[in-house]
Every structure is written in structure tokens, then in C-alpha cells.
Amino acid sequence: QPVRQSGRDVTIDATMVTRTHNLDMLGMYKAIRPNFDEVFFVVSHSATDPNTHVSDLLCSYKNVLCITDEQLWYNNQDELHAMVRSLTQTFRNRYEYYFGTGNNADWLAVENELNAVERLDAMARVAVEMVNEPLEEVDLKFGVHGGGG
Image (cartoon, rainbow, N blue to C red; front, side, top):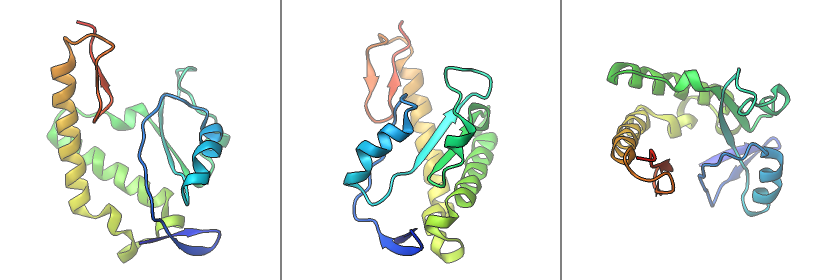
């Protein structure tokens, strides 16, 4: 499915999803962009913690979506579904320029929301399993570190 780039439809042949604590998005963009058609960032940050705060200028770029940590919080299955639904709408709004809306936004279909809920459930189970593991132990699928126990 094509994305919008410089006012034209461009097919993306290769994709990569990665997780990092590096907030130097411009540096990462320069390093990654030559290998891909486009680079998108989703940054979870705290508005009050200076160690994880991201500048408003960086969040204004069309390929960057900044969300606060609080937007990711949930306490039960109903809240988890609501959080995923809310984030999906936020993604649609932010990346509309690239992916379009309506029928062109199938990448954010309801089935994909349900898949996201299942992945988050699986990640939560891994987090519980990792609590007593050393800090150096990392689950490679979800990037969850051991709890130091």
C-alpha cells in the first residue's frame, strides 16, 4: 500500500520497527533514512520529567508522533481496549498525510486494534515473568528488562 511522500504516492518495500531510549531522532533519522523510503517516530515521553521530555519543535515534524506516558496507562481490559482505540485514532490523525483516511487507512483496521490488544496482553505477561530476572536479562520480542530480583 503506498504512502504519501513529497506530494506523491510511494510504495514502501521495506519496513523496520525498533525500540530505543535514544531521543536523538534527527541523528537516528539521518542514519536510518538512506535505507528506507520513510522513517516514522512514535515517542512516549513525560511532560514533567526533563530526562524524557521531547521538544515541541521535534514533535511538530510530520513523521513524529509524541504521546505522553499517561496516554499509555490502563488498569483493566476495558481501559486497555479504550487506550488502544484512542491511540489508533491519534495515529490516524497524525499520519493521515502519509497513509490517507477512509479505505486507505486499512493498516489501522479494527482487527489490527484487536491484534494490538493481544500483543500488549502478551507483553504484560512477559513483564510479570521477568520481575525476578536480573536487570541484564532482556526479552528480545518486547524489550522488557528483568526486574533485578
